Amino acid sequence: MIDRGHDLPIRKQAEVLQISRSTVYYQPRPVSDSDLVLMRRIDELHLEYPFAGSRMLRDLLSRQGLEVGRRHVKTLMRKMAIEAIYRRPSTSRPAPGHRIYPYLLRGLAITRPNQVWAMDITYIPMARGFVYLAAVVDWFSRRVLAWRLSITLEAAFCIQTLDEALSSHGRPEIFNTDQGAQFTSEAFTARLKQNEIAISMDGKGRWRDNVFVERIWKSIKYEEVYLHAYGSVSEARTSIGNYLAFYNSIRPHSSLKAQTPDQVYFHRLPQTRAA
Image (cartoon, rainbow, N blue to C red; front, side, top):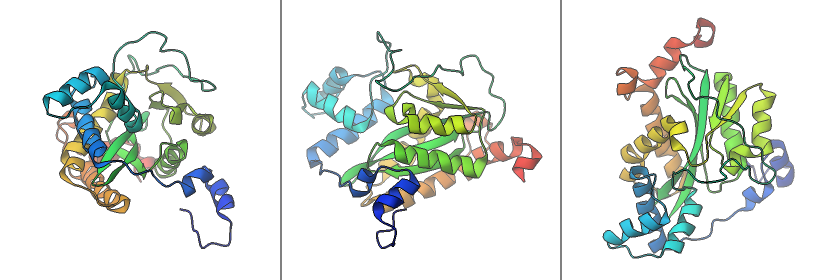
């Protein structure tokens, strides 16, 4: 999106795109091969045992011959933006300067496309590094409406993904996320308010509040990501894009009575939207 050869200075381009200038110049720090192995395995274990904290993950890794200390596991979990799922005290306190919104979906019957969208971020391992994948998903149809890869966890790429979904698919009544700093930031929530979308947030550490997105992550990783060792971000973007096209338009879902997300999303939209 940034054109380094353009007459407009990079600072101005970043302002127009509403992204942090630091993101433009960011160069990822190299991660050791041993840490990349650990992060890949932690990611796999987290998908299978989302309740496992750093202590349990350390012990599970040890059983597989990967000796690592608990503190290092915690450090890698923070780098990967994952945490164990369990009830804990004082989870309702917002991050400094960030407002936490209530969860609006409990007991709500979700009966149509564009009623509820959800968004989340996940860690994507590559051959010599990693990136983050953000996606906006229609809760009713499970359709991935927009997605992006980023080498950083700043809010900018989440806002860009949200903007793409809004420009391509209209707007939902409710938008649900977790309490990650990217989603509680004023820049992100302001975008939802501008579009008169009700904001819903999971209870901290309660992955079941956003379970459909978690299931999509599992499908993407086991059916695509873990089968490849992406050599570059562009390779990861192309391969994941091909998979998501397959996921939306070809792959049948048992929860959708063997239909695809595209079939459910476009069939159930009002005629004016489907057109």
